[in-house]
Length: 339
Ligand code: PEP
Ligand code: MN
Image (cartoon, rainbow, N blue to C red; front, side, top):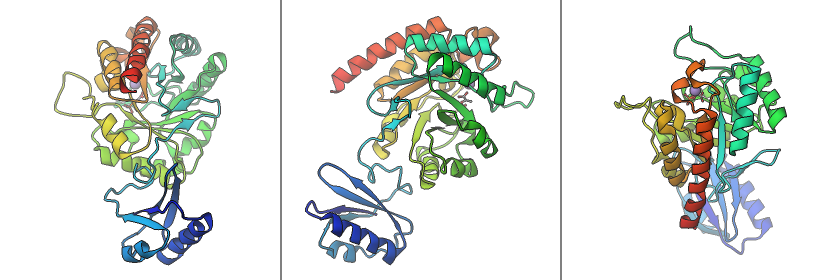
């Protein structure tokens, strides 16, 4: 339920009204203060809330019931875009284009340092790299695990790029303490226990869309994290499974404007996992910018043919230079066209 307050409502009236709602109906109340209005978002079981009583209160302008099952992630509760700011100053969702780039897996020190340096030079703002890898086969390379995390930290020290890496188990949260953005992979999008634990920490979470999940399910997973108190969620569209086999997944680009309409959270696109083919990454990156994405996540490897995972979809540093240049040029034009 959403309650819009009258413009002339005093601070004291607002505090009293909020406390009354919480006590009378056992709900929690989120307050969003905009330039022209103040909106209260009621979270919890609102079926008992008497709309007529709420409407009759002096400071209430209007009341609306919200159909969607997500509240904290809902744009109706928070009309402005969420901007996620890292302690080191980088922003996601502020209208700029963030680029997270790096190898699928961290393989060794030379590899991660070299790729980090190259993607930084090309304009990437974050270094990605998997240390814990969710592989379809238990016999495939599983990642360097904690050693991989240490190598990422080393590359961060050398380049200054904040690091993004995937967590696979809630038992590893302490190990991820100094990771800048924790990624939840597609396969764990509905690992609700993991999401709940990540809701208790104060760190941005990059939540990838599940292989076969609807947009509503995806936003509900963000809601799990937010319900625990962590509002710093970034959504990542990485393609979904359809009957099409020409590409690894089907990139659902319309998800970008759809999610942005439904939610205030930033949305980025991963064209690498979406297509599975390096030659498609450039065009899909450009298309993602045109769809209004807040950023891109792109796999880059020093030697894709020899990559321990996802070589077929990885760009060489030279290819990434080219893609990044075109993407930034398009973003500039996009901003001019869209105002
Ligand atoms: C990854 O980013 O390396 C990854 C495994 O992605 P996804 O969860 O989207 O498959
Ligand atoms: Mn990968």
